[in-house]
Image (cartoon, rainbow, N blue to C red; front, side, top):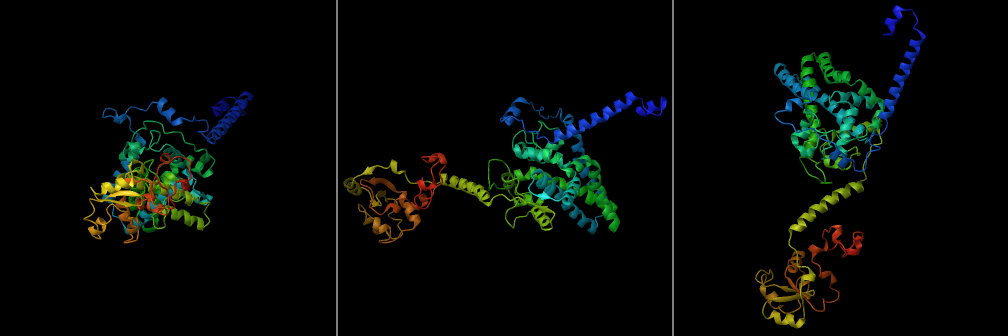
Amino acid sequence: MSSVYQRKTSSSPPPSLSVSSSSTTVATSDMTTDKLKNDMTPVDINIPDNYVEHTLKTTKALPPITWGNWYKELNWLSFTILTVTPTIGLIGAYLTKLRWETFFFAIFYYFFTGLGITAGYHRLWAHRSYNASKPLQYLLALAGAGAVEGSIKWWSRGHRAHHRYTDTDLDPYNAHKGLVWSHIGWMLVKPRRKPGVADVSDLSKNEVVRWQHRHYVPLLLMMGFVVPTVIPWLLWGDAKGGYVYAGVLRLCFVHHSTFCVNSLAHWLGETPFDDKHTPRDHVLTALVTIGEGYHNFHHQFPMDYRNAIKWYQYDPTKWFIWACQQLGLASHLKVFSDNEVRKGQLTMQLKKLRETQEKLKWPNDNTDLPVISWESFQEQSQKRPLILISGFIHDVSTFIEEHPGGPHLIVKMIGKDATTAFFGGVYDHSNAAHNLLAMKRVGILHGGHAHGLEDKLIPPSQRLKIARYNELSSAYGSSTAYSDGEGMFY
């Protein structure tokens, strides 16, 4: 408008207009500065302590999708990308011969762009699990753009929300809504609720992230389609094959590889570190996600640059980051304390042992057994086969004929103290025999057990037992306060 005004009046703008233009420039500069400051201010700095509960109660979700409104609720951009791309790829594959050079290049480009997501978007920017040099950052930013999954900033914001609000309605790909929803459904339709707040102010300070965010669309087109088309064309004259196989179909595989981290990794496998939430570990998921399949570990220790902690587990992303460190391109690789990792493993092992323990039958508690005098023990032994061992009275009526050493060895000890014979005098019985004997306790001899046999009172199966903290007399008692010399006893 100023140029039109200048032609109609004079070659120099009037003072009033000059002031106005200057003011506009200053105002625009101030707005840009304010926006940059806002981007660099943590968005979650003032959220209430009960943010999750408060948000779920006070914000209304969009109505459920039905046959009557589904077409109004589609996210048409994502829907188009995720449906048209495989359609073009399949038609193109039908019409285009696959050359071996293009085949291997497509595999290479799959890993290249896939690592842009796993090593770049995910482990570098979303979780800050290592530091990368500027050249490596630009390389990963370009590779990630070729995966066509949004900019670093957008992707990391959603992923951080996923970790903070895992399995809740504030988790953008909540696994509790089903395998299809967490895999692809959440992208095909408008989000039913805005994802929970997640801070990405640190990424706003990163010049590589800002550069990629600002130029994302041209970078997407260049890295997603132009580069995989031009390279096969220049090197072996297969532009069409490059576009179809290294461009379009490769993109479909990268998409669903990443989507499997949100779906398959929350559905298939085991929970060796924690079972509070849905993430799981499985080698199959690792194979289809470039190493992101040890998801239970990852959700417990998200800032660890590894997903797989054992040398033989498949995690090419970890190997890539390690190799970059050896080349001087990466540094400060974060590894969680092995002590804390083993605590997580031990917790789950103890939990499984507790579940097994609760399924087994155990001897009657000592406090539930009657106290019997020696005279009463003698008298009752005339009516049924009772044997005294370690101060406990046992009814062996169901075991006389089953005794491996013959019934006569049991019969001759009826009404007598067989402690010495049982613990090595005649035969040093096995732990299994001691455990079985304890199941036959029917009483306690008045006056207790013979001195020096304290270690014989507790069957081997009960010398180590899993106890919850509230089952001990004090939640803060040390383990030694309840130790029988070998471990926790309850």
